[in-house]
Image (tube, rainbow, N blue to C red):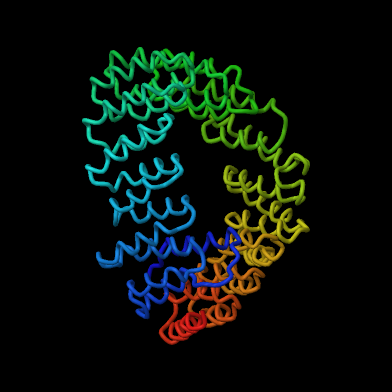
Amino acid sequence: MERSAAIQGASFEVARRRTEITGGLSAGLVELLVTAGVWSPAEALSHVPRLATDLDRCGVLEYLVPLLPADLLPSALAAAASVDEEWQRAELLEGLAPHVPVETLAIAAAFGDEELRTGTMVKLAPHLPPEQLDEVLAAVLAAPATGWELRRLAPYLPADRLRTVLDAALSISAPFWRGAALADLAPLLPPDLRAGALDAAYAITDPDPRSRALLGLVPHLAAHERATAVEAALTAAAAIPFEHARFERLTALMPYLPAHLHGRTLAALDDFAPAGSRAAAVVAFAPYLEPDLRTAVLRQALADTMTTAPGSARVARLLLLLPHLPDDACAAARRQALADATTLADDDLTASVEWPGLGRVKLLTHVIPHLPPDEQAVVVVRTFAAALAITDPGARGEAMTKLLPHLPERDRDTALHLAVTGTRAIRRDLWRARELLALAEYRPAEVLAEAVEVPGESWRAHLLAELPIPPDLLPGALAAAVAITSPYWRTVALAGLVPHLPPDLRSQALDAAVAVLSSA
């Protein structure tokens, strides 16, 4: 029995936001009673006002609408329109749109917040009939022109509306947004409109949006236009003052550049900091370069990286370069990465300032896969010893989880036990729950034992609902769910457990759920 993603998501969000529950039903209880046949979808709809939070109401309505007869859909939509927060209403409408597109559009069109109104109407567009799309287009054209909504609406519009869309894009005053709109519209435009878009791209003087617009158009141009546009895009991209943006644009251009322009592209990396984007750019460029040039560029990138200060960042860049280097250079990079990861001071390692030792173990787990098999075994033993030496139990458990895929069988039991018990030291229940869920497949009994000890009932319920629990442990899990004092969170746990219970336990779980309903 597959659970509703909308209802699971609602329960998770209520827990994550630490919503105070002062009464009312959970979305999980509604799902449980409907799937068990205790309530029909129509009966469940009548209980929507009794739900504890708007998150629950949204989850239940998204779950129920596909199950309701047509004559009850207006009631469901009225309930959707009554959700207090417009942003929550907007998210709900996206979930309802595949089933009642026209009606959800009417609710979205009444939003008071203009940005949320147009954004939501655009998100509904994939589900709307053609006659409704003009209403969405009119709303977008009336909104402040950034082109964001225009770019997302365009793929769903009929071809005879594209001229209107292009005219709107060309009227955007900010070059950044105009360039983005031209780039996104390029694949949709017929040749006669593409020519106007290309002229508009050449007319942009700011190098960032100019290169973006030209890059978007390049794949769709005829050969005689493409050569000129590619070179213009390269010139503009090389002039972008911000290193990260320049890197992204140059990398995206590489598949379209002829070999004679590769030198110019590499020259645009000259002022990239060796500790910044240069290694990543070289790796991205390498597949497109001629073999001799590729080898020379990669060797230079390695030499530049070796001259930067030791630290976690240098190890990361060495590992990035490793798969692309020739054998002799690869061996040198591997040796340096291992030496750095082994010898760096704790202050130079991410996560080690607060939890000494954890950063080194995490860094070594990234290095280990790149080592030859015989060296891997030695480094794994040393790394395991370093993980055992971490004094903070939570940090030690995290280290064991990271190291687990590399450990030999003889050490796995110890590592798993320390990882599971180490979750007790994790201060936030959300993080503790995530760690336990990650470990559940390896140690289900131990994880369940830890789950029922999580102090917060919301995350205890979430774990009982989400953990993959073996059949022999289900009676204990059900007992733990029934023992939750909050009726709301008790039913969240029961809803997650019921699909996996055998008939006798399922009957007990339903009795417990109905008891909550009777006392609510």
